[in-house]
Image 1 (tube, rainbow, N blue to C red):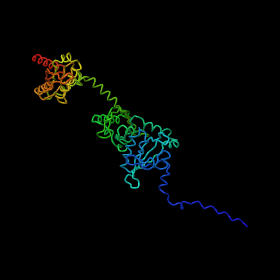
Image 2 (tube, rainbow, N blue to C red):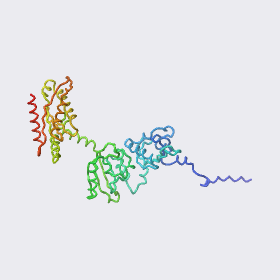
Image 3 (tube, one colour):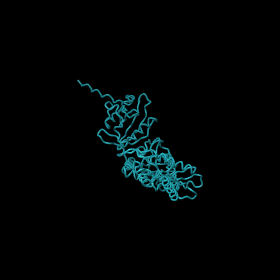
Image 4 (cartoon, rainbow, N blue to C red):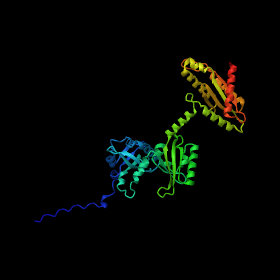
Length: 424
């Protein structure tokens, strides 16, 4: 009796037998990490690859901020991009360093899609792709990606402008320093980003000269991305590479110089102001007086110099010590500034001699300003040894045609001593 033939294996299913794939299975099996976050960046869902590569747990990590896994230097870029993508269907790809499940910072290209208004998603969908995966397939470009990454993460600012000075691209320092996402800033003129009118004039002149003569131009300007933001001073160098086939842009590189500007401002202030009272010193007083005299030429404005001497100041120092004398001098200086107009200059010539430069409509107005200084000094000065009564001896000089600064100082000084002698 012959044995029965074995049953042939069932044929493999053909695509016609499979039917449509299940969307959830496809999404979960994608080769790239996919996560869904809410508007603040809290995790709502993660696919299998996100769990395997990044250590996200769709259950255990739900509600935790994914921002915790972004490199600190990339946080500003990440948050600006997350806020930006919520107002559009598809976001721009950005490069972020993300912590993987082994505790290493790995570069990923991240792109988002806003499903906040889709009842099936209720979040922002983020797709991540490891950038080092691309390196294995890169042959012709050599280390171009590495050069780009170094440029993007360098502390210096790099901008690409078109032939109308409009922003075409920028390194991530643009977002880190100026606090604005790049996508919403594209198309804006560099002149528009300049913080103050003088900065805009500087940028406009430098770029105009660059277009005319080519080459490079270096200049200092403060930039801000939005009104009300702090102005960031930069030293900028613009290079015309519009004719370079690989670039086709004006490349602007910049270094933030806030500390340098602050140090320069401090040194300038120290060179022109009295260290004790904060008033203008003799150098600045003469400069301000010269400028006031030049501006008054051909006008009816009267430039006045008021010389002041604190009566009995030596006795205050001798009786109570220099600390008390300094306190008196500082208070008198404060009162003089408060008694005059903001645009007036008040300074210390040395010792207890103070000076004010003011511009008024008449000689009588200058004399009224001098009387205001005397009245301000009449109230006793509170000190650690009790109130100390002081008075001022004052004299003034009002500019005559062709007056010189040194001549006005001599006249005001002589008038002050004449009043002092008369009071004695």
